[in-house]
Image (cartoon, rainbow, N blue to C red; front, top):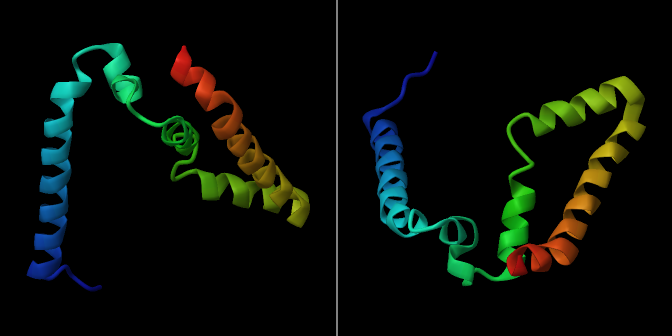
Length: 102
């Protein structure tokens, strides 16, 4: 089994530190109020907010779910995945503007 080199560990530690610093930097602004947290003070373009909303529905288990659909229904089960994608696009283009105004 291969082990991590000191360079690998340095990259991982650097990434975690950078992520922590970015989170701390933006947490001050995001904690001002709910509108700041969800909509970046209404300065975030609608398409970024919508894309972020759709992206939250895809996680590490998504490939497992798609594999399960295909295993259960054959290759036709992959169409379930494509309906998620088309539904996500509709969410971005039709509903994100409404969410931003709400």
